[in-house]
Length: 323
Image (cartoon, rainbow, N blue to C red; front, side, top):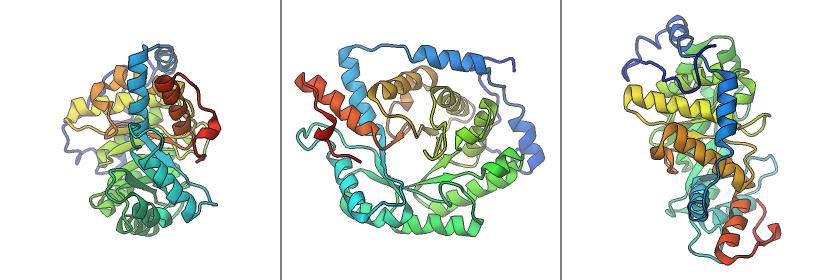
């Protein structure tokens, strides 16, 4: 691997018909993308992670990060009461401070979509649903499509699907592509986020290839992880994905969002990601429409830091509701 992590990939126009017609054509294109310099990518991610920002910029970054949170509960023990409480918190993260922004979305299992939608109404907070046999993706396509349609019919604004990592790693790129296309169609007007489970993809080159495959198939967002496999989101992996969406836009004129998920717990972590977004993809991605955090515990730390900046006092972790 000889290229630096900032190499711009060369791609054709937005019509990918010739590229996506078979495993052979997809392999030729995906394996022809510039290789990722692992050492360079990790060094640049580490360097960007050391950037400091001034107080006014930090206040802006905290509010922006809150607006980018997909507030998530994806546990087998989830209840309708827990989802209602989470949805209420998404709309009013700090009930004592009406100036605190809402989160971007609440992310739940498909059977909890109607409950979340009932609480959120037309507040502007979206309902995201994990589908397609989350988190493993091990199910027949018709089951995955039914899962998706059920979530959309229940009111989901966004669908977070998981790719078939076994198919991807064995080089069955056409199967993965076709499945994303089919799920995208089943989404109707709902936006589609494509989860790679980067902790299972083994190499940064595979992350870059999966990114291009998902974008060519019509994904609105590319997402690192389910949060169920370690490692989940990391700065170097997200850097590779940000390069991919930047290069895809340069090649096609189309923007695709990025969502790191899993393991992002602190305000310091969130700001590192925002610095990276600005430096790698550009300011256009500093918007909840184009960048999200998949998180369950991050919001409380953002709220504690926000309270410290506005009042001069730290609020303890018990001040805000546990998610």
